[in-house]
Image (cartoon, rainbow, N blue to C red; front, side, top):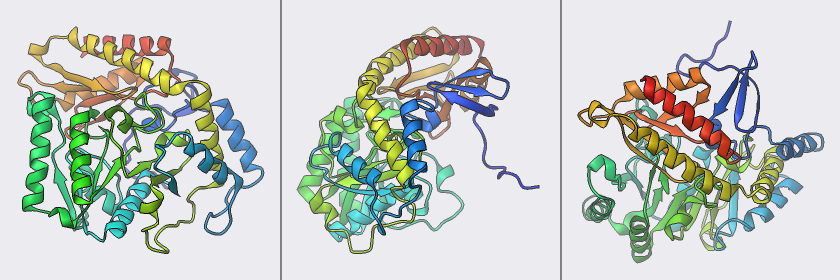
Length: 419
């Protein structure tokens, strides 16, 4: 008999029979409130009727039309639809399948566009699992260990993670920018640096938002030195943070963004958006792929963007996110910090992380894991993240209701009382 790899560990024991909206149902019909959303993928909720209908209709007419061989209507419609939501200057698109592929496409583009070898990423960032993407990932060694040598030309600068440093946000930001300048002086000169690649909110790194001063510092240095600024919007894009894209909270203009996850409500689709001038500097033959811009995925994406707009899901993410963050902070405050528990609760929109720490302030992954297990037993599904896997993250679909947020927070409070 064949079996899945023993290293594919599930975060819960649930075997799903069907799903709808913010809920999953197991084989016995038990309902689970899904605050994982497929790691931020099912933005319009599970099996949204409009997305289902669009995919079903497309399957009956064309499943796969390889987009460097033929063109198909769903891709043309998606390209037009994205023009309505992308930053206006990002007017050239390339599509692929996964977030890792999008990141690698961005890496290839910035190196070709600038004729420079090096890129700078930021401590705690997650960019994927392929060799290049995992080289750029510093949210945990589990993503890059065991298959060295990794790719050369990647250098790491600090992200302003104030809680970890024990500083104010202003102090952490000043430190991060100062160390970036030191990196220029000691490791990679600006003239050999092609790009900064950074998440607006660290995802796997612990749900840590950046800030306006930090991104303004990156933009200024990028402009001064001819470096491209790449925003990795794979987890933060398409309304997740309460704005269409996470970087829009911070008044910063990227040269390139990467996207995936929430664009197609569960169908595999990713891509990069850049200025036409930058995209034109890609080398001939450097962009392609067999399954990129699959017709069914594109049809689902067009329907997804329509649902996000028509149902006001970006605004809902902002409102429900504020409700979730306030409630998670209240639940954490009800505990006993001196005995250990949740040391910090943070997030942006429908990305909320609760960081478990021991009484001495060190990371407490054991209690975080226990919280996840107890929550699943109660019918609330969540995930962990962070370098020490001590952050429990809540990432509901954008369609989540106020009542479902209250229900989830009630279960979370019960969990914290038990552990």
